[in-house]
Length: 219
Image (cartoon, rainbow, N blue to C red):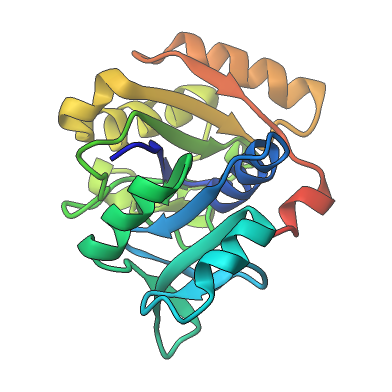
């Protein structure tokens, strides 16, 4: 496999981050493939079904980006299968993987079956959304109960750090040393400062990001 593989897990902007990364890499003339190992919404653009219809390589050459998956009845797509995935890894310059779901909430705690990370991933990005600060875990965190939190627990910087550390980083096993935390939705200076303090509490280094409305609607 020749492609670089980057896997995105967590909550608070995985899909936006993936598509923004794909668009940036495409500008350099490289080919990008996007897949999910679980489920994601079918995008409005660049989708190719996992049966790889005639002419799919021509479409990829023209657009620079493809999203490959098996289409489900609910409008979502799922993993295209090992053979297709491995083929993409041999043809692409970069493969971007969405490795779990979050019910569109800004925070999550990994379930026992999550995340699903390809074994040859070069890097893992663990996302969390700073928009969760000040809300309760019942409002803003998927599977909060797995950490023993009451649904009315307010998400402070310390609680968010605990959710990221115990709910994601500790559950990554051998992938933890390859993981960078991404605190997304830093939409103003105050949230950016909150993100900086949260990163100081974590066992892995991280980034602070934000995307404008246009970028969020690209997918």
